[in-house]
Length: 219
Ligand SMILES: [Zn+2]
Image 1: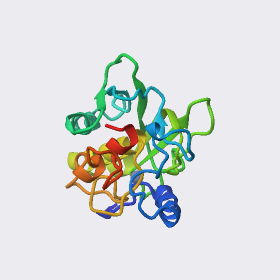
Image 2: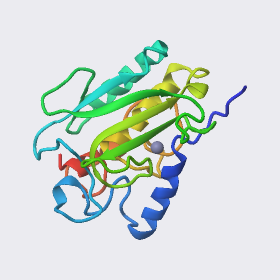
Image 3: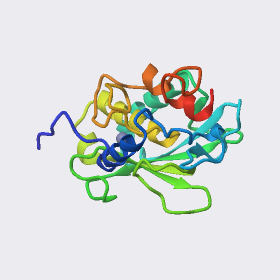
Image 4: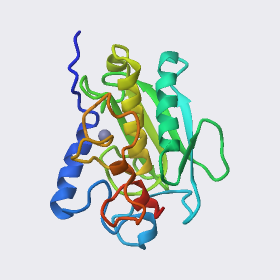
């Protein structure tokens, strides 16, 4: 079956972002006054092992390549592009001291249900304390993330589109929501974005002029 070039990456999150934008017009990628370092205000967005001023060590756990080895190089490119970009994030396939875990899982249309025929990937973030894992751009202190990738779409694509979806979903796991601009975190797939753009990273003065990764982790 021929697939459309433009596919919703994460349909539920589009709704979540739209609601958020209505109440926080300047929020952009992240929640205003809700990042790790901004105090105990709610909603709150962080990763469980974050320590101010230290690198954010992220362990990627490969749960897909045993059934789809061809995807691995795309995931590795996404990992590398995130690690090479500015910001605190250091992503590795191997355990790191004080790391926070992101599972990369094989999926197909309907499994999990969030992967409809036009959704290529989805990210469930799971809160510290064991509450419900959500794929709805909801702020939380993220304990671990479960990312799923749709083989009904991936198997007909080249590596660039797969890399785009891997990098995009990793962005959700790091705490980014959707962005309206033509960047990695826009809500549709785009082979031109194989890693985070400067908008996705944000300015070095956290949250002053943009709300990217640096804003969340005060980097
Ligand atoms: Zn998304």
